[in-house]
Amino acid sequence: MQIVRRFAIAVTMALALAAPALAQGEGKPELHVEHAFARAAPRTGGAFLTITNTGKAADRLVSASAPVAAQSSVHESKMENGVMTMRPLGPLTIAPGKRVVLKPGGDHIMLMGLKKPLKPGDSFPLTLTFEKSGAITVMVPVEKAGAMAGMKME
Image (cartoon, rainbow, N blue to C red; front, side, top):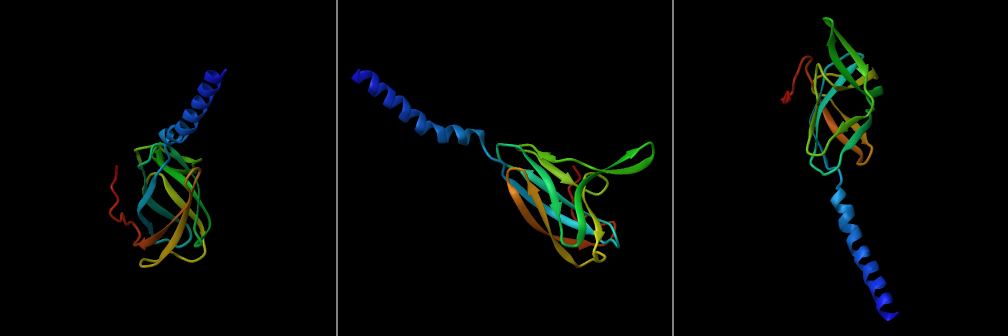
């Protein structure tokens, strides 16, 4: 009976010690936001940036907000039958080890109902809310209309 009890204690301790290592193996997302910029705009604008996930788990961008706009959301732009269309996207997944580029003419943060025009030289905070990583706020400089602000077009 002593041997069974000692074995049970040993197994319990081994599992308790292994649990944190098992949880670490699942990994966490590690997000880095860079190259943020917006273009000058009078009523509706766009914010562009790069999100890199250097972690071991996927995360999802679920919302965006900026004090300069009444509403902000992730949109996609694409050409359909020779016409550029835009539509809201649902949550945007950032896979582990991957980079997502939000760029002019593609996926971007739409800034609707600007409270005042975005002018070159201005900047504003943009808060990105992720499913696992929570809120990340970045400063977004405003460039001239048509700017690409050093985007890596991947």
